[in-house]
Length: 305
Image 1 (tube, rainbow, N blue to C red):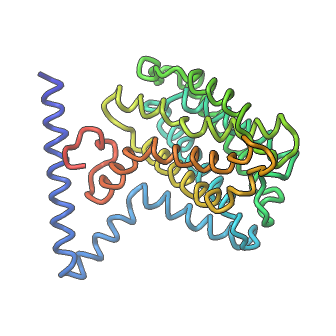
Image 2 (image 1 turned 90 degrees about the vertical axis):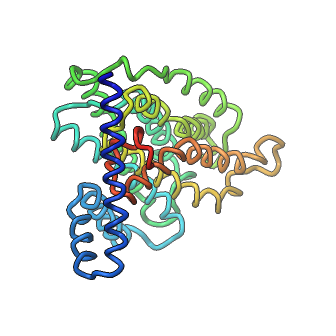
């Protein structure tokens, strides 16, 4: 009975939020003062401040560290990903809690970032062509790895009392093992060094399914923490940017003289697309929550999303 009441309350609240937001939209078309108030209201939200600060940061990075080459998209993708980890760390430290964070997802991201770092720090095959690939791109990946490791430390040690392993139940080893096998068979050779080429492919394949432990946790808990929702949205944006780059450059990954490796570029694009499809339903509801003025924490229990 209590669960039913909570669900009714959640749905009722979402209906009210949704109607209020849509009603405001209609009035805003006729009243400039209300439009101004609505814009000011959005400007005060946590999401607007976070994304606004990030957009300003990206502009500064592009101005000072990029030569304007199309390959800057790789660096931009890494920047968005790093920003998402910063959001999580800041929220954990301010709240003193890791409630709603999947440690297993973060452990997968640690494996992803470590694999990619092994492929890009000593080698140049997978680096952006512009000057952001001199050191900035690698620095972003390294910072993301450290931030991710700190989140895992918080889940396992520092704030372990707030971490609920009963809702973080997806065995991430079943995600890592297939990625290892696939990377051993399907990998490019831009570094011309087998271990690093396999390492880069492993990072790509594992990253395609890394968010699954967090999505399973959302379903177990019946709700999504706002900051983890923003984290997944930022990761989805990062993957979209990366997809745009590799969809335009995938031919460079293929080896036309090898039967299997002649399709590696296509395979990489497919795996990039898988990442977007895995997160597609969540992002659809996330965007609708933002548009309707419904808190993203309620995107799993709203009939209006």
